[in-house]
Length: 240
Ligand code: B12
Image (cartoon, rainbow, N blue to C red):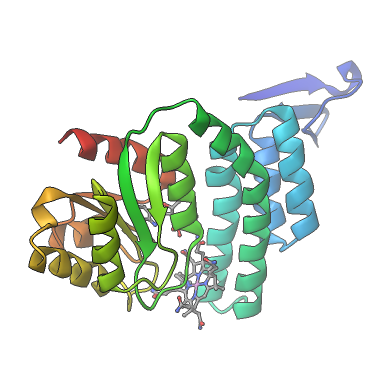
């Protein structure tokens, strides 16, 4: 929502900007500040803005998806075009993590109120160490009541299969951000097939290296390009 006031009417407004003669305040202002703070690689600013967002009661999911995540993706784009280097990528991800840590208690609090929705084993596939998207999906699933075993990053197909069997998972979820690691998802599915358990569970894939087409080709049961939709998709998978 965007609301404008004439400058003369304003005594004090949180989260407002001057545009010409008007002061514009919007609930998305602080979210935009979060995006910018990540983009500026400014850890302190990210923390301060995230704390302010919590204080103002901004939806943590929106703040993460439309603020922090947008910032880090823009850095990724700049990395791709050679405008920034690996160091900036690292610093940007540190800034994003710092922000997520501030919102995490709010997301975890939602989890306390719910009953178990299903059991999920999640991990980033072998050869890939990107974990922020996976962590976000994990936090969101937990907040929605799923019991999640997070295997971390660089997870071998054997480890996926072992854990799926150990916790009798309903869904196995794999994240991949590198084009070189995306084929690993298929390898895990083949390993599940070999063990005879592929049909008794659902497979969800995601991460920047996965497209809807790729997910379809590898016969995954679910795909999403964001943590919010992932929850709906996982709930649907539980009922299918
Ligand atoms: C941050 C980052 C890093 C950080 C990772 C820190 C960390 N702890 O994760 C660091 C600096 C370590 C890093 C390293 C590298 N990176 Co990097 N990195 C990124 C960057 C900028 C952002 C990734 C991110 O965190 N996004 C924010 C999160 C929230 O979004 P997300 O991961 O997409 O996740 C969302 C959805 O995809 C979905 N989702 C994710 N997983 C799953 C799983 C399931 C089951 C579901 C349903 C949904 C889902 O929900 C999430 C939440 O909304 C991307 C650029 C990009 N556009 O993705 C490059 C990028 C992925 N990296 C890239 C590269 C090349 C590398 C390096 C090889 C660089 C190097 N020369 O060393 C190394 C790889 C090391 C390795 N072996 O893995 C390339 C990959 C290119 C390619 N096509 O393969 C990218 C695309 C940058 C680019 N444009 O060139 N990287």
